[in-house]
Image (tube, rainbow, N blue to C red; front, side, top):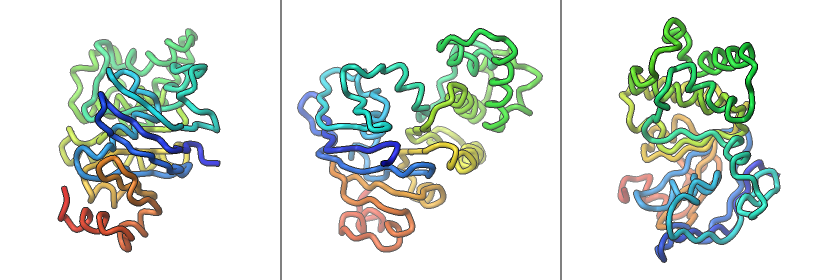
Length: 250
C-alpha cells in the first residue's frame, strides 16, 4: 500500500466543486508533481493531504485520504499529529516572528522537546540539510525576517524537517523566488526524495519535468491522467493532457 492513497475524493467550497471523485495512489520516496491549469484543484488536492482545507469556511469533503491506511478525515484522527507527519512549504515563505534558531526549534518544542542539546542538534542538522547552515551559523539569534526571501524559504524547509515528517508537501514552493534561489530549493527537494515522499503543486511545466518522478494532471477538478513522469510527458493518453502540455490550455 502507498503511504498516501486517495479514494473517491470530492471537495466543494460553498457548492463549487473543486475536486470530483479523485482516486490515486502517490508513490513513496519519489517526487510527485500535481499539474494542471489555474483553478483546476491542484492546491485543494495538496491541502487535503494534511487537512488544511479544514480552515476554509463552507468546505464539504467526501471520500477518503488514507495515510498509512488510516482515513485522515475520520473524526478520531489527531490533526496535530497528522500535520507533524506532513511538512508543508507555501508559495511564499512565512518565517515566524522570532529568531532563526527559534523558527527551527519551534516544532520540536511544541511537541514537548525541552532538552537544549537535542534542540541544538536538530537546528544544526536541519539547517545543514536545507543548505542554510553556512549562511546563518553566526547569527542564529538574529530575526528570521532579516533573511532574503530565498533564505526564508530554505528556513521554512528546515522548520518543516525539524518535526521529522514522513511527507513533504509544496504548494508552488519556488513561485516567489528568484531563479537562483529557486534552483537551491529544487536541489534540496531532489536530495530529500527517497528519505521523504515529496508532493508539489507547480504551474511551471519545466519545473515538473526537472523534478517529477510521477505526475498527476487535473482539469476542472477531475483527475484526467496520472503515471510516471516520463510516460505522461512523452506519451500522454488523454487529449486534454496533450493540449495542456502543448500550451493550448493554461
